[in-house]
Length: 117
Length: 117
Image (cartoon, each protein chain N blue to C red):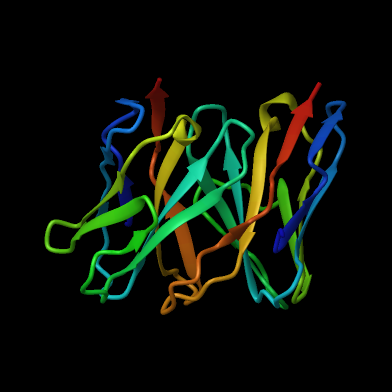
């Protein structure tokens, strides 16, 4: 079964709306979660690293005020796309798990397809 | 800066034949991990195989094997006895220590594999 749950699976909303996406680790604690963005036929682009109890680490070029990340517990990280516009339409996917010195892979959520009208 | 290169945007393979998907990477770290993921059209990320930088043996998982050449910084995926269900995007990914000491995972541009009956 899924070890990382992402919700919602898809969102369609009007321009200017803020959209919250949740990422939950189901049977393990995740001090670190990752948020990716993927445009059609392109790769996953790392947006930010979500750190439990501290500020997220954003990749270069990602607007912190646009993409708000909160990692309030060891099993939940949220990404809020604030005042979304059509150019924010994309596939957003989170991941968690794994350690640098182990062979455990990152577990991915099933992703959220965001469409801004 | 880390970088992953997959030089084959698209590949075709006859059913039941083997295929090699190329991946080269660039890192200055001594400890890192390499992954291959499969992404079908539905969008979910499916973990295939892992290779640690200190692993001396090439990783194998069923029909998947990883041809790891550390000096060349390459980690090619070999799929044996291709099946129609193997048609998907394939991403090479690398995990290494991030700037805040949390490990992060980055992805290559991907290879679209099509299996021909």
